[in-house]
Image (cartoon, rainbow, N blue to C red; front, side, top):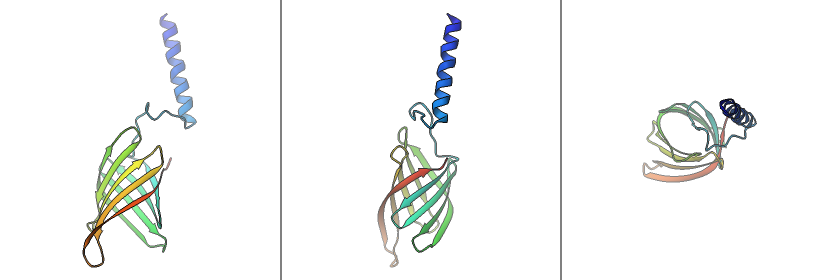
Amino acid sequence: MKKNIITLTSLALLASACCCKQDKCNTQDHEITLIGHKATLSYPGLTANVKYLNDSTIYWKTTDEKDSVAEETNRMVVKKIDGTKFFVSWIEKDGTTVSQIIDLEKKTVEAFLTFNNAKGKRIAQMLEGTYELDK
């Protein structure tokens, strides 16, 4: 009996490992994190490459349609909403705030930004885009 339990457990672990190697992991059974990963975010007119350096630091680099580049490393807050959704937020050096809802399953990102316009007035902007977690 004990031998059967060990054999069945071994087979279950082997089947799980094989599925994961084929990118068929059940995300509910595995702990997903952004920390230590890179991602590409594509918004209309803007592409961002991000690195989640640790649980409180994000590096980002954006390129717009005119090839203007901006990059920074900022302190961030990241909170897992559910199995495949995350809330990420940070404040940039110029005072711009960025808050994102990332959905890894749907490969989408929604961003809410606040910043000063050219006249110094605080304004808000919503962006929707695609999200690709680099492997």
